Image (cartoon, rainbow, N blue to C red; front, side, top):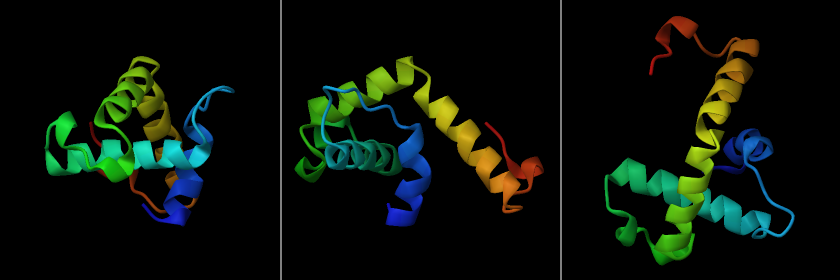
Length: 92
């Protein structure tokens, strides 16, 4: 993920006061994207994203909290406000 892409996403990713450093959160987010992009199992997530169990735990807690839906809604709204998306193309 590019720095510009992360700049759009980062404000919507929850970071607890006692949680990992923001760099690790970005790595873990990238690990989640890698897992779904490749269709691999969680145990196959490369170590550069952190331990697979941590990446999975982060995904699980974010999913339960509704973070991914909120992120999608925010990114669609941002793109629409810039005139960069036709909402008729957005689907589940």
